[in-house]
Image (cartoon, rainbow, N blue to C red):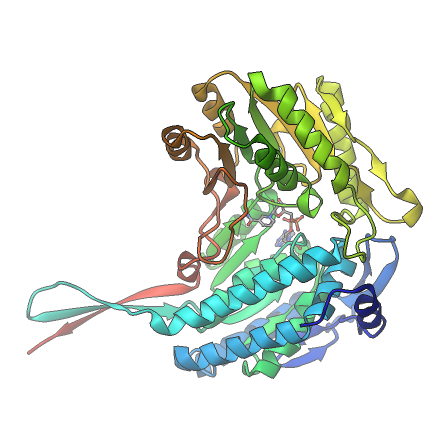
Length: 499
Ligand code: NAD
């Protein structure tokens, strides 16, 4: 493992070859149309490279090759144990190229090298290893039927999977889809977000090097309306596994209905409540976790604790603590391993955050901390950690996903009010509950309509073992855990007559 020093970062950065091509059938190639888009780094606003944009014909080619490889069983017919060895090798290659991959994500979307190198890469590697290690330990079922018949319930790969992913954790979100999809024997086409295509393109070669047969894995960089939509409407794609906004998630569902009724798994947005009861046993720990939950990764986190719901009598004390901590969470040079936060992904996202801060002011909330675009001299996109007080739950800044470092603080007087406020949202991805009363914690966890509830922590222990996904408009299906395998498997029932 390479140490994350300034010198190593500089050396690796100066030798990077920025990936820009499509990866189809085990080879890098230009798009058939030879169209490309400018890939801009939000760190300084400069063009990094020109990345080829996959059009309909490229999608058709990648899908037909994926289908052929699936039908021929090059990968799907390998034993789980054989696939396991190949994915474990892939994990070692990610470790070998860890700094390069981390830098590609940092350069592409602006998050810090500390985050990409020390969080995104190790968690991606862990995810691959976890799925590789469980796949040859799972058994199918036999039904408890009459003596004359034997009923087998077996699982089969679904076929061709398109994984469409966002930019906030470019490699990690891609691995959440492709590790369980590949290990179950499917052919996979990965479409990274247009803001962060490079690490996805790079792993095409690494999967080949690990031993995944040509055609089984492709990468199609491109945009949503052309590349993503073509994949979703394709009649020979069996499943779209999508992570991104609810708005696009709804389109993906429509595309499925307009084409072959392909399976759709969705991980969408959130406006997650983080409830601090006055009887919380450690307000310092709660404040630290609450600050991290909204300012970590520049607030560009689906499950960010963006609504801080605090019991009235501790509001001032608690918000002061979070505000104090936020002073050390300002953005700084993303290549400095000491920086806490980096750049916002692009100017559009920066403008959106700024717009919401102005809306919050117009709605009558008070900016307690921050509220401004910063580091303009870099040419990049940066925003200060921002805390609003006096927010009402019907305000836009309490209801709409901002996807930036903006915290909305609300208050409550009793348990029922806290839970009702927490649930009063179209989303249901995550929630935090801080109390020393175990009964209250369990009751809150049962009553909050969210896929994940953190009790006396916020996202601290997250790993591959536990499924992640949403209630309500935060999604359908789950990533992570055994549950994610279900996204990529068909259930086959076989009745055998015993004569
Ligand atoms: P987005 O919806 O704009 O894009 C996501 C992906 O969909 C991209 O690859 C994009 O190119 C593609 N896309 C866009 N339009 C499309 C179309 N018409 N057809 C098919 N594909 C299309 O989201 P984003 O801005 O990249 O990411 C931020 C969103 O992702 C936030 O809402 C965030 O909450 C969500 N997210 C959710 C999770 C989760 O686990 N629930 C994790 C990370 C991010």
